[in-house]
Image (tube, rainbow, N blue to C red; front, side, top):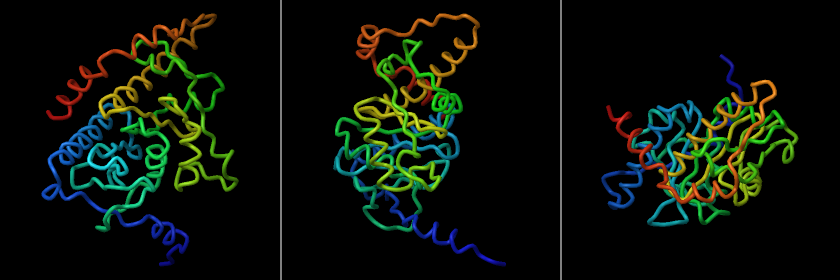
Length: 258
């Protein structure tokens, strides 16, 4: 049997990653890891993440580190699958696990956005639609009022000529983070989206309701002659002071624990 050398080299570039040893970590870190596992399960259960999406959280013990699962589907993540990285997306310790190829999304955003403590990257089909159709993704639902500012679109063609559509290196991760700017979300052309927030609960709520808002907007756009009323800036500012999706998080938590 012939082995493709390119494939072997590609796998070799995915550095072996460190697992978190839950028996040896401090209580605050253990709590974060447990919450991150729950977020993975929730976002997988709710269809926000497919087999290839991922969610991370910045370490409270060391803000220059973050936690992200190894290269598996979000819905199957356990505490033993969590890897600790520095902001250059290098593993803190090497214990032989392979990380997501697009892990650079997280490190470069945390590096440029000190206000961000949690990041979600997913591939919802309705989001991909808005990344290619030329119609801006704007909020029509109060639950997605955080999208009231323009949602930027990142196009890998602006930064690479080799046909790469994934964020598999620091340069593309940095360019994506710059396109995100101070926004709460960025679409990736033909690929999906990245959502950020100051907490894990809020980023989970934002990712879920951004996808729902995209479906609602697509429905409205399909009505012939429809005149769409979007959420206004003052309404968005008022909604920003709400409870951070805690009721939704409580419901989702119970659903995945059954």
